[in-house]
Length: 576
Image 1 (cartoon, rainbow, N blue to C red):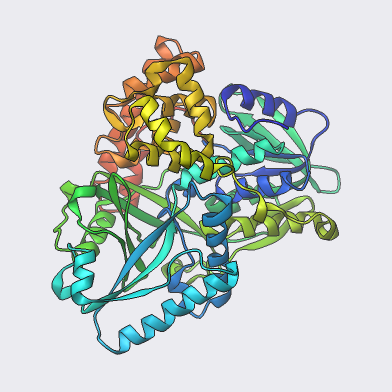
Image 2 (image 1 turned 180 degrees about the vertical axis):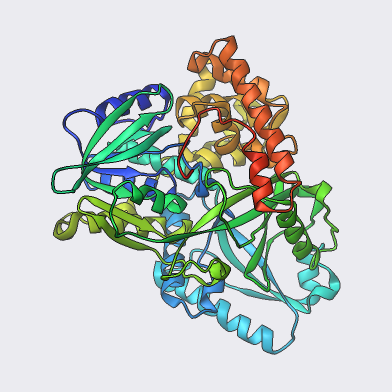
């Protein structure tokens, strides 16, 4: 069986294999959560699969989410029972079987302002939420709701404003590092035989004399060379880029997708005092305040987006919106100076036959699969939590009548790092003692790598210096940078900082202080010379400065102009 390793070497081998004369059964375009899920689903059915991504894995929406695996409590109040039940079942699978190392249960506090009516209907709603979760998973995966008095709520979350609630409900959802989930999905697909190549842009779709799509012409962004991938079926899973990709087929059919921006901010962990997360209903949607070890995540917004699809950015208006809504219930008095990181993603919302961008919050999050042309399928909509269902539907659609005899098995296929997790958790104290790590370090490592931690330890076995933390970012080990290159497919400094060692979003300087040490670790693994090392550093400095400038702008258009002033280390034309 192939290994799950993603590296520059495996990428070159995969590109050579997917562009050979044999072709593949399914070519997946798009390396976000949906495309990665499809690649895994197809590979575990025994199909020959290739997946390509124009940027780094998860570089689009799937690394810019609210980092939640949740049933969507707000959809329950829209009576969208089917979507909520489906989401809660998938949440349970991820927590219990598929990725228990990556997906962790997260308690949330829902502040109440009315003593009788709000508590009653909220209790019924959350109670139904809990019931649907038990029905979907046939047992309780997370604790049920618990009602708190005002004093108990303040003891649980001391920074809640006393005048902001009369009591609260504590309930559970789950959180996940979204980029790590995508990369782990790709790695798991590769373990089962999928061919995977990042930084590989589809520049055209190939068609035969009848107009049938027979594969794609791709550009290797690393070398500038073009090659053809022949495929029986091509699946477009490019999210906000759906219509751009469909246009390559020159067909009239296809999905219409509306891009909606969701902005988030991170503030230091010590700026908010609370032992749970928080769920707030707003005039437009909902707001989450979620604790992570080093910071609090606050999000999200929901605004129409009509600018560059590659680099959506948060504006000062987005930042102030999130701060204002958080400060309405918190006594922390958060200011712009407290913001250490921002990110913005584009939700690919299916259009119900209209381009009325003002109604983005009302559009259903359910997904749709459709045939764009003979040989070409598009899938869009949905959300991170339901990626597995979306993938199953897409592959079923591609197989047609064959799907009944070749059903999906991803509901019982653990992701890389899940198998053997319980045993490794028992070994954690011994491992920690060997390297003089504390329990927080072990929790961090197990939560990122699970049982694949033994691969990280193997790297340390070849170079003891890798067991040390990064000088300017001690939350991460030097080994995690090396592992990002040798096992997780990082090809550039930005790949590490944005999607693996995520300092781009978790530190005020966007990882600039740690960048030289990170480049020192990466350079020998990727064969960089002095010129290439400096080029990587300069590109990231330019990017960080451009993002700083963008966040000082009021409008999306002005912020985008600022962001695009920085040149990409690997130019990409997708979405432009």
